[in-house]
Length: 328
Image (tube, rainbow, N blue to C red; front, side, top):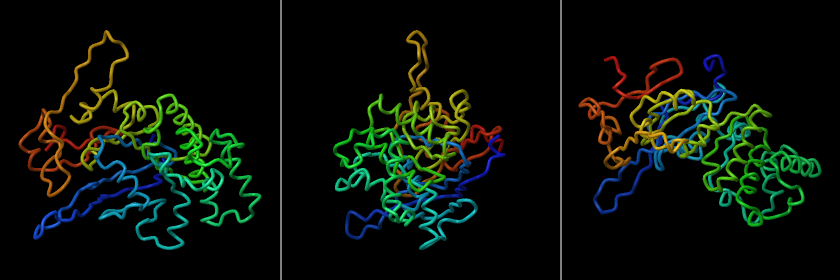
């Protein structure tokens, strides 16, 4: 049972806004609401999948968790400690436990450094292995762990394939023995055949090291394959959160139903009703009133245009933010 597991990270009412400069003289600067009032518990040893359309705030959410973006408001607790209050050495020590694998396996690697130096860099920064011989041995061990040929240790990033570069990123993240890894669309830039290899690598490493993942993607198939629980994001908010199997068998939110209806059936003889959300996605810029899906939802009520639904428990392990399930 999930409620018996240890909460590794607790996110409370997390909000991230970006100020946009006025385009004309005399205009007031506007605010882009990238992440809006997100609350979620992340359990030790699980994979929490985050899925939604491009621009919904998934990557911003992941980067805000590790302070690559400074949160506008809200809290993030790791093992009971508020990470936003940490500074200096305390913050540096925390980042040993929390690592990130980025979307683009090429731009996230320094093109001037060899694979060995890239993987060893966290060890040098955190002064974990001052002995060069032991550090080199650790790098070779990490390369073997992620399936890289140790003979390529002195190659530069441009000499590797996309899948190999992402394996270097994974090895670098593992160098500090983290407990939580945030994976920001780590396979979206890879060929489908290579995607499967990298996903299997993530699964194997999780079992071996008891890792916890926050796995961000826009690919419904990938998320289903890797996740224990899935959070659906729309316009900066989590609109549904539940166990992976339950979500695909019994989606509740109209947006989730529309997303899942886009998955092709396994048999060409099985017909599936496609739910099309009409209208444009609302702008995340400026004041927001009511449910963000109200203008596109086929089941929209008058209340939806005026009030913002909160993420509420509907059944064990299943939360949804929709007035269709509100007893009020």
